[in-house]
Length: 69
Image (tube, rainbow, N blue to C red; front, side, top):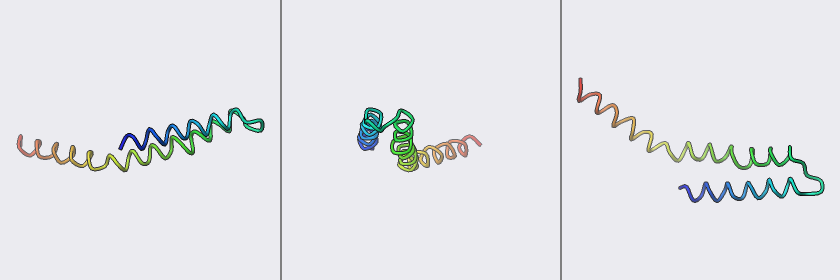
């Protein structure tokens, strides 16, 4: 799971560097490129892919709570 996220982050960083160093590029454009093509998808995919782990943790917590009651 993490290798895909790291790989996509690498691609987004390279795109931002290309935007910043381009003759028509700007640092603001590089920032938005990195944010919109890198961080936003990483956060969304990371959240979706970690939902089974969150569900397991919630169920385990509920089971422990039921045992103590």
